[in-house]
Image 1 (cartoon, one colour):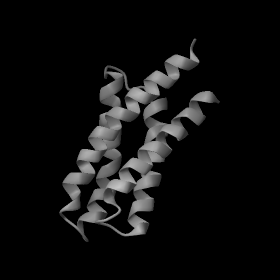
Image 2 (cartoon, helix red, strand yellow):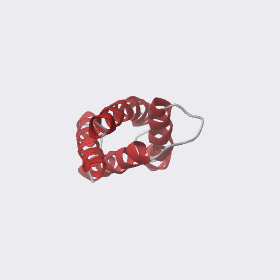
Image 3 (cartoon, rainbow, N blue to C red):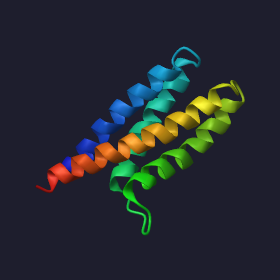
Image 4 (cartoon, one colour):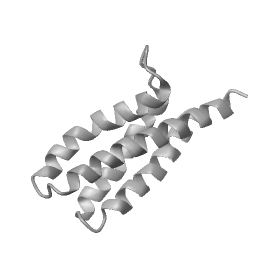
Length: 109
């Protein structure tokens, strides 16, 4: 139960960071979508284990791949936002992995 709550808290923090970065460029609906995206992504990153891949690469990979569909939709409105969205996906995916790994290690003690 603690890892579920932790992953959601991590996701809320990551979602706020990502939404604030895009708030001036995009609509509130898109920013809310980005927020929810990172809440869901953080849940998957913390709880997924891909064999043969390091835990920090898992976060970057999952975050990047789950951002691709959203980026395609946003590209129709604002193509300049796409590099920012992918950079956020990579950076926040790594940070979510680090925070998730730290959270899980705290729960195991």
